Image (cartoon, rainbow, N blue to C red; front, side):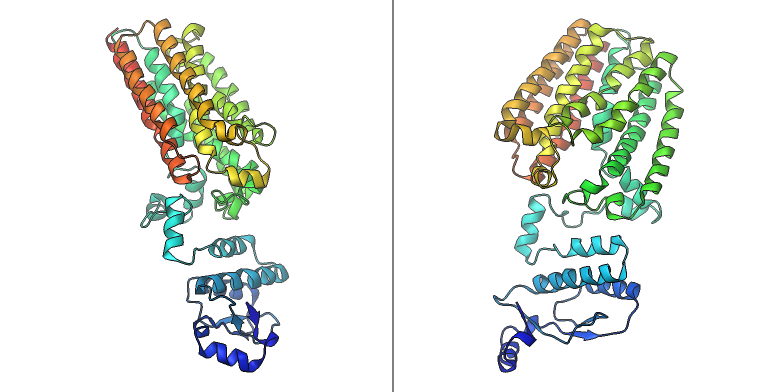
Length: 423
């Protein structure tokens, strides 16, 4: 595109009378305060490209003319991004404004582009709206998003190893301790939220450069790091209340997991195996659930159970990491998705086999009923389906397979439950 001042006026008039006329964009001078101008630009972000824009910058009146008939969104959003970036630097506009402008500058221009991005998981589906934005007060929403309350899959993945362990610790012919399961369910919700908060605080410089994470509350500037720290303290305080309901052995064991929780977000900077470290962190409940019921650990049972959870995490989190592999390369962080590359399916097939084998060994050592192995066969089928059918180049499919792991956990739990009842 070119500016009116760079071409012959007669050619400009000819072009603007022809098919380029709808894309004409006029800049005029207005005397507005910086914040009023920012608010004005944000309002105009959803308007047509042919609407009049006003700017307080010292720019001459000009007409922007595309060279190859681009869409109005292309002209409008790229104009907005370029000039508002200059404006924000000169007038020190707060970063959330600029982050929002950068986001809308990437809005696809055509219906085909939008549909393509939706199918690849880069845009939300039509009508998709988080319950947080519908039901919660405006002041609470950033904190709910920070804790990922609208994405419960993380809580499920953290809770299932706890439920497996509590069920295994039940006496033969008895149901699990429901009070203990309720405590661990609440603990999983709180600890997962605390882990997300720690992750966002430590990764805020990286999240701004990754497409999937750049609008998170801390990265986008919606919450300050201090507000995030205060919220983290609140979550840990509630978690402490749950931990104090357990026996002394479990209190010490549970508190020791905080070292893993706080250090996990840093692993992606140093090793290609952060998914393995996440496995050690996320499956700590396999140890804690048994000790909460029994008052100690039985290594012959809990070590295979813990190992099965670590291998399971390596499967689902490697699939999950394939969503961000392009951004990870740009930013310079590491993951098993980058480490395995085209050999990912072979690697996660091995991890899946190790997971099922460890669960079988755990069931054998616990002298559990035969129904456990029937459910374990079904769980292995679900895991094989994930691995064989996942399209690692499609973000949406990677996310679907990742989310489906809640059913793997549910099937294994059902197997342990019925195996204990009938043992």
